[in-house]
Image (cartoon, rainbow over all chains, first blue to last red):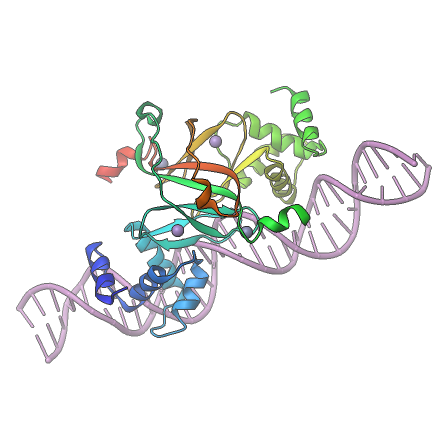
Length: 141
Length: 141
DNA sequence: TGTCACATTAGATATAATCTAAATCGCTCA
DNA sequence: TGAGCGATTTAGATTATATCTAATGTGACA
Ligand SMILES: [Mn+2]
Ligand SMILES: [Mn+2]
Ligand SMILES: [Zn+2]
Ligand SMILES: [Zn+2]
């Protein structure tokens, strides 16, 4: 991913392109997994510039608010993050909590009446079950 | 809700019907909202028998594992719980984190190929946006 | 009645996330 | 260029949420 593209993405969302914010965003854009804030903090700090824990959290909050990053809450575990690239759904493993991408397909919206005066922003489809790694251990142990 | 029904529900899931477990389950079955563990702990203990915080968490874990109760993780907030009665979807407010029920409708499953060797247990549809209480404050505040 | 697996408990501990207040950065404009 | 100043970063404290530990209690059943 081009550095200039990231800078423009941030600018376009009204976020200043600081070295720390850039590092968090760049890491998420190239990351295939769904890292936790702690993992992002560690990874980003394996190279300069340094980005404190508070700043990692601050920037993740800002990026989520700006709609550039998605936060996935997993029961009993740390939240996970991914850059919003191509649309996709998520599979969350009951056993290990891993979050994995599932190819996008359209989701039918609820009848407008059932939403009342609520303002709908998005529909999120989450699949649950056992991931490829955990499924085998299911029957045996 | 009939006490005998609750007892049979627990028995049927292989869970012993202790006073504490009964109290947690009974509270969830009559509760219209989606309380947090802390709220369940408080409410259950407004009447006898006493149920400790650890036991509240233990029983919620057991009930979720048994498939009688659903846990809804909300980003940056305590998890919320509801008894699995009639099927329904959930709306989560971006602003206040409230979880509300949305009438059930069928969700198309992913093409089997896109799941690979994963074992699918359920599809969960979550709507996000602003709840009835928060929507008005949106534009102005 | 005795046994034993399951369940409960208080309090300690772990984990995740946020807050605080001081320092620093980096636009903007004179 | 260089104040001025709001935005940002920071270390560390603090809060919030959830789990663990080890001692104790409970009840089904032999
Ligand atoms: Mn993803
Ligand atoms: Mn519900
Ligand atoms: Zn897994
Ligand atoms: Zn709301």
